[in-house]
Image 1 (cartoon, rainbow, N blue to C red):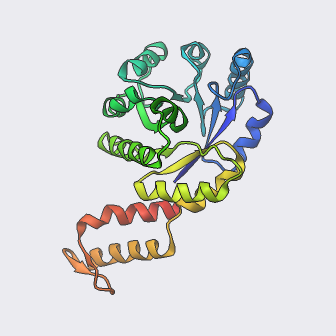
Image 2 (cartoon, rainbow, N blue to C red):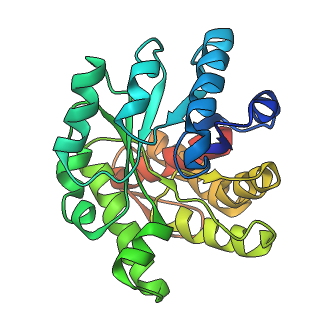
Length: 259
C-alpha cells in the first residue's frame, strides 16, 4: 500500500513537514496547486529542495514542459498531468533524455481514457492514475457508476501493462474522513494499491482503509499454508476449496498487511 501526499510547490515551509508526515511519497506540485503568477517562485523552491534533499521519496507533478528545464538536473520521478496519449509522454522523454521508468501518467479526459492501454504500455511510464475531478468535468458525469467504471478500466490497464496497482485520485472533501475511508475501501476492493492525499490528516485514514482485515489475513495465511502442505487442490478448515490460482491474491493481501 502506498500513500502519496501533495504539497504546493510554492510552499517550501511545508516541504519538510510533508516529508515527516508519514506519507510514503511526497509530491511537490507545480500544477494545479500553484497560481500562474507563482510558477517561477514554485520552480525555484522545488529546485532548491531537491538540491538539498535529493529525489528519494519525492515526485514532482509538472505544470507543463516549461518545468523540465529545471527538472533536468534532478533524477526525480515526475507526475505528468492531462496525458492524452503516447505523444504527450514522448515530449517529456525527449526533453529529459529519459532511459528509465520515471513518469507517472495522469489521465484526465475522455481522449486519455480511450488510450489508457497505449499510455500504460509506454516505456517510460512507472504508473498510471486518473484525475477524477477533471474527468467529471470533461464527461459531465455525476453518477458514481461512471467513476467506478473508469477506475476499473485503470486497474485493468495497469495490470495488463505489468505496472503496479494504481493509486486512487485525491478525495477533495478534506473534512469528510468517513467518506474518504469508505471510498478507499471501495477502491481497495477494485484492486487499487493506495491513494494520493492533499492533507496530512488523510494519511492514516487511507492506511487504515487499505489495510486488510483480520479475516482477510487469516484467509491468506490459511491459503498459503494449505498450498504448501497439499500441493494441488486442497481445502481450508471451513471446507473452502483452495488451488494455485488463489496464491497471488493471498500474497497480495499479506503484502498489504506488511506495507
